[in-house]
Image (cartoon, rainbow, N blue to C red):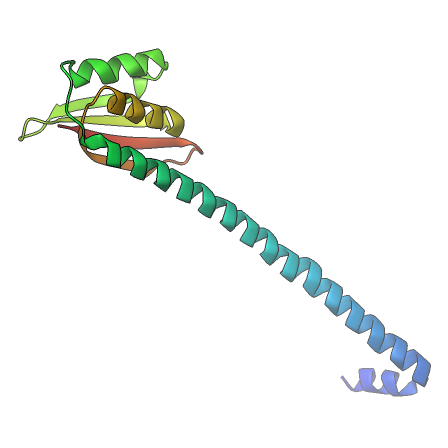
Length: 151
């Protein structure tokens, strides 16, 4: 530290001003490039993710609100199975269970979110009710696991 003070005191007034200016400029550039720009980039990514989540929540709310219509004569097993076959996603249907109250529980794993939304829309068009919908994200983007309980 003493060496720095001695070096600084030996500089001419002009050189001291230039040195202070250079150190200030380098510090400013460092903070701008590494801190401020990095935080802005992370903020932009978070905003994009938030918008995507909001859109998905809105879609799910719309589908849930439309799920209270009467059931049609077709079996929900047949409708779900046929729909998934048409979308080449029949392997995603892992299990169908009948619950104690007589409803059907479909466990779907590794389905694309867009296909799941199309399935729910198809069920709504056929006036099939679902009382419970659980969606879990997976490690793959756009792919989810879902459990649908049909009345």
